[in-house]
Image (cartoon, rainbow, N blue to C red; front, top):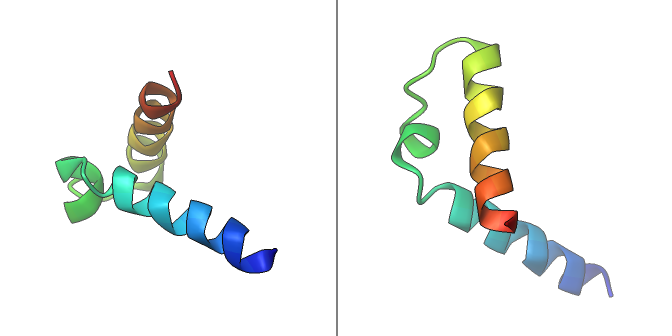
Length: 46
């Protein structure tokens, strides 16, 4: 059961890293980076 959840989380990170700005961490401060991760997550979810 734990492995299934781990697989979902790992796939989510893989999909997030398809976004160039998130994968290379262009934003050096926390707030813009969190905003980019949130935006990418919302777009993937929608």
